[in-house]
Amino acid sequence: MNFQNLVLIFSKPINTFFTQGDSRSIKAKRNILILSIVKGLSILMSLVMLPLTLHYINPTRYGIWLTLTSIIGWFSFFDIGFGNGLRNKFAESVANGDDEKARIYVSTTYAILSIIIAIILVSFLLINPLLDWSKMLNAPSDMNKELSSLVVIVFVFFCVTFILRLINTVLTANQQPAKASIFDLVSNLISLSLIFVLTKTTSGNLIYLGTVFSIAPVLVLGLSSIWFYSNQYKKYAPSFKYVKFRYARDLMTLGLKFFIIQIAAILLYQTNNIIIAQLYGPEQVTPFHVSYRYFGIITMASGIIMLPFWSAFTEAWTKKDLTWIKNTMKKLRSIWSLLIIAVIIMLVFSDFIFKQWIGDEVKVPIRISIVMAVYVIINTWNAIYSYFLNGVGKIKLQLYAGIFAALLNIPFAILLGKYLGIHGIIMATSILALGSAIWSPIQYKKIIEGRAKGIWNK
Image (cartoon, rainbow, N blue to C red):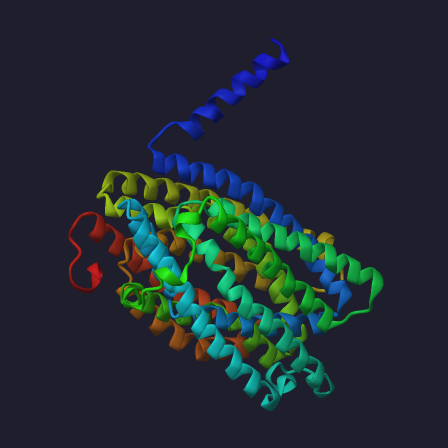
């Protein structure tokens, strides 16, 4: 048997897998394939970037940088849910063949978010001189001037990225998340290249580091937006002519719920860096982050698989294709079982991999790795059902549960953090996430069987 025949034997089932099935499934599978390649490269770059950055600045400064970016990252949720509202409404409009309405939603969202971010930016620039960032980040007092300048640079670029990132929402809503993921890959490549240059030409400088990480996404998203809205997505391109503020209510009705859920998610998942910095100092944020990035490979793998399905669920629900939804959910649960095995293998070899990856500069206690592994398992399970519920717009129970968990998380994390250590902080978040792991499958079953009533159907 020659090489050509071998290639044919192995390529035929692969080709069949990616070309057979309904159009929605084919789109999802092709997106997952491309996302796997793109995100895989992104993971490799992030694994290289972490030790490179860590060695450019010391662990304490790296912990400060991580805590600062966590705080600024909170502002990404100040779209008041318009981004996710656009995602669902755009997908519905395209499914119904109404391209003009889709363009109205796109244009209106750009206009509203530009107004919101302008107000936030001006307010921040006025308030920033009054803030003592060294105290807020539990950093040495002589760093306050440096941190204040760093925050201005990072925040200004963040605000620009905030608007430009809407192209990702439009692509994802149109079931083309693979294209959107390429933007992050190119941004990471640019950042990695520039950081490498910094390590060869300068000594550790947070200002330079912040500028490098901030400018790359602005360049990539800006050029990508111009390209897509001038070509393939020209019929959806934002235009003053199509800004209709009366459509804001459609976006806001669902979007406000998403906004509250996002705020709850910040308090539940994005406060750990700050709590650790305050309880144990910024240098202890680094081992937590190393473990988070390591096991985050599984979270990213789950995200690669799940990303195409939000808008696919929206389309299927709009067209009443319940059979496709049931089959898809069953397959996603099977994939989750495989992810658990991967997490266990990663946990077994975690100490060895950390030593090879980071060296002896940062020690990650095994207790942190264990609770981080549990945290990832719970949240990848929750992702399956949250993507379905988000796609069909049944998020009121998720809203209430998220608020309840968010209000408890900070005091609970501080309590367990004081008595158990850093791993207690992660444990607190995992315990609160268990609630969603129980009720969300119940809600899914009620909805798909047509038995959902009251809050289960809202």
